[in-house]
Image (tube, rainbow, N blue to C red; front, side):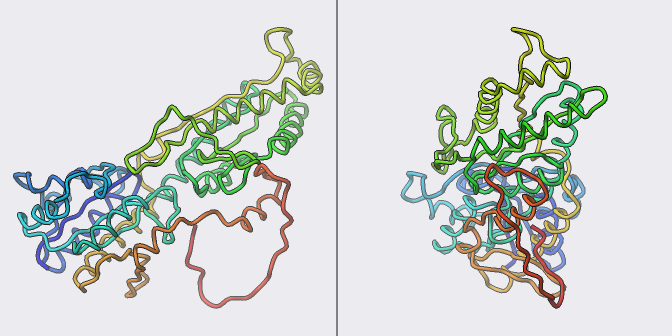
Length: 401
């Protein structure tokens, strides 16, 4: 191999620019040339019509920062299989041939990874550098740590306004059908309640926990000040298994429902129970807040940090992992590998797994949840007892998330 293309696809997040730099610097070290294919799979499909592509040489690498979130290569959400052109795969191969590209590095999540598997099966040499802030691949994915840190900071900072107004604050975050980001960020921010897709929500359990903790805080405060924080993953379900979804949001390029409405729904369920709770107006009067017809129950507010959790700076962990994943992808291509996902780099060991297996969705470990339930955090269900299994192990446990 002499020339390699690289593209990033799907949702943007932290660490992607480190993937680009890691791949480019390893390419330089191995006397290869690395070129950006802009705008994800849309750019790959239209490569044949491009006049030129940009080489990531050392001078070009100086123009962007590995710590910036987002991607210098740009993104799109395009499912190659869904393109109606029957000659689509030949069109992609012709584009690569036009620029003498011998292989591809593709950084994306499960949807983008499925396209990469498809391309590999069509004879395109490609390696997958795992990327998704949802952390739902079998490997660690660049972007996860950055997003968790940003959400945790937002949820923590919101407590200042929550305490000032004695509000219940509900923060809705991304994650689709795996609750890793809500779970880990909520723990870090000391959220009172964390609602994730893996645990259907019993709203009576949530309200009982909220009413007890929220009212206690305000009663015990010498200035009657307190807040209660909830972190909600967008793919949350009711106890009967029904999905909380705003049908007006439509579907994405891969045919998935655009999940929305979990935060709003949570607020409505809490407000409904507050209004029906005979103890709530008594509490409001005891703490000097009750104003008939105006302020009879505490405020419940919904917050959407939205794309802010993707933006800004990447965490140090994601920059490190990004460099390693990008560099490892070059080494795997040079060894003739295709259709595989970088798992980790440990010293001189470059580990990888078959991409069709890597993109299988991984969910939150409910035994891990039980530990935090024993510490008093509500997950929308009757707390599961935590019975530890104690064992001595050799070496260091490798998975952070």
